[in-house]
Structures are given as structure tokens and as C-alpha cells.
Length: 382
Image 1 (cartoon, one colour):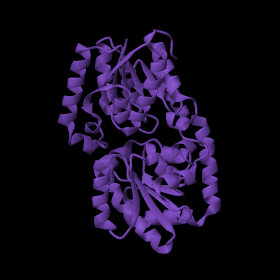
Image 2 (cartoon, helix red, strand yellow):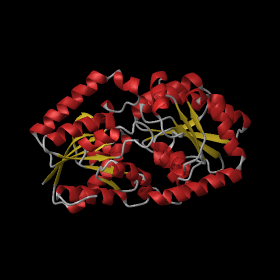
Image 3 (cartoon, rainbow, N blue to C red):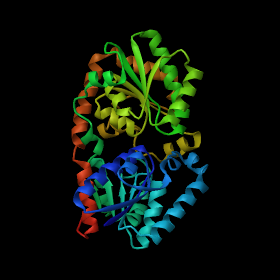
């Protein structure tokens, strides 16, 4: 029996964790898993100690507002895992929460893995020293991340991105539209305001208002959206009824990948979803808003000029980014209209996406499982 502790703070981490557990199950006789995760980890057999949505918060000021609740959860998890030590603890993303927990568990003699490198290549490089004290091994998703960990002698393994393994190189648009009851002949625009309620609060309104503006100039546009759960659906619907009551939006719950596959273009919140859209080869317009203080701190500490993963991977402005003061209905609509008007530009973007997607296909679930088992067995994982 291999006992595993896991903390995944959001939907993308839940997906990564479930894929990892599937591969570990193929290589071990029995697993016992407990911690924090979503429906996919629960379906994989994990005992939930706290619901995942309690950790799904982003932004410095946003986290500060729930500091005492998050600290209590973290302290209770530490106490639990020390009293009932797993063979290995895996913190999936959520670095501000997980790295402290990993550090304390490692002090207690428990092997620790941090899965998904914090964006030290983008800002706060000093965190690498904290990561070195916290994790016996870092599993990174992007090829450019190894250099910075090697610079600081942090054991790491580039495993590729699991989403690149799961998403087909050739999206089946017709099948996806049939599944979601979407007209084949329409130009389909997906509106994806994020998975966190705090993101939906800030981003749904400008996306919906931009959709209204673009539809005025192009009546053949058909809008769809995908929300993570019923709570997000109700929140999004409430905002839509206030700011764009006349806009028809085909909304699905729990089918974000089908929504992306069915779309011709996507307007979405910055984050993992931009990588997914890239893997589906969909031209996109990226939107994001943080609180003023969080944005100011990020701007001061940022080391790279881009926010979205396609642009970071490409090393250039491949897709338009409408951030903070540029996250307005008028600018979002204008950027979407530019894509709609240029077949040549959208084809260039798609070709770039094909190239970038190929770099991320490494059979990540298997690679991550092998690295973790090697660590458990005491082998060299560098």
C-alpha cells in the first residue's frame, strides 16, 4: 500500500492529479489517497479532507481577505499528515498554499513533490530558494522551466503537459457542435470568463458586452459558453441578465473542452484555459482583471512582457491580451473583429499553435508517475 497526500487547489490541478493517479495505479498494487481535490480526484478514489473550492482564490488582496480561513485549513492539514504520514505528499500548483505545507512536511521526514512549477520565470524568482527547501522534486510542465531550477540546483523533471497528450491535434468541430446543439453554419464564439467566481465577477461583464458589440457588426455570430459547475453557471447567468439580457448564449456546464472544440474563436480569461484553447488550435482574445493592488505588485515584479501562455511559449505577442484598463467591451470587441476579418492572420496563428503544441506532448501522466515512483524508491531523479 502506497499512501499519498495530495492538495490540488483548482480544476486544472484536479485534472492533473487524476491523470497522475491513473498512471500510479498501473504501477502499484494499492493506493491510499487523501487531501484536497475536485470531482476527478474524488472519482479516482481520494478521500476529501476539505472541498477544493475553499482554495480556489487568486490574487494577493483576494487571498488576504481569506487569510485566516486558509491558514486554519493549512494548519489542520499539516497536523493531519504528521499524525497520519503519507509515503509522499504531492502539492499540485497553488504554490502560496502548498510550498509552506511541503516545507513543514519535509522537515517531518515526508517526501514531497511540487507538481506544476510556480511561475518563477515570470516573477518572484527568489521563490526558487523556498522551493528548494520545500520540495524533494519539482515536476514542470514547460520546457523552458528546467534552466532556472538547474541554476539553483533544485531537483526537477520536465514531464510535458498532460493536456497536450489529451487534446487531439485535429479538433472535430462538427461532432462537438452536434453534441452541444450548435448550428454548423454559424461563426461560433466561445465566451469563457474563468473557473473562479472572482474571475467571473470581473471578466464576464466585459466579455458579454463585447459580444453584443461584435454581433451588431456581424449578425452571423453565435455565442456559446462553458462553466465549471452550477454555482458558476448561476453567477454568470445573473451577470448576463443584467448587462446583456438580449444576447443569446448557448451555455454548458462541465463541458469546457467540447465548447472550445466547437468554437471558431474564443474570448477568455487568462490562465490554463488559454493553453487549452491553443491546443485546440483556436484563435483567441485574452482578457483579465486583477484588483488594483495585486496588479500593481505583479507589474512591479514581472520579468516577462506577456500574461497568456501561448504568448509566453511563443516568446512573442501571438494572441491579443486585453488586461486591466484594456479589458473593456470596446477593445475586446475590436480585437475579436480584427481576427474575424483576417483569414490569413488566423491561419498563421493556428500554424504557430500546431508547432507549440507538439513541444508539449511528452506523455506527462506517465512521466510524472515514473518520477514519483523513482523518488519513493530513492533513485536519482535529476
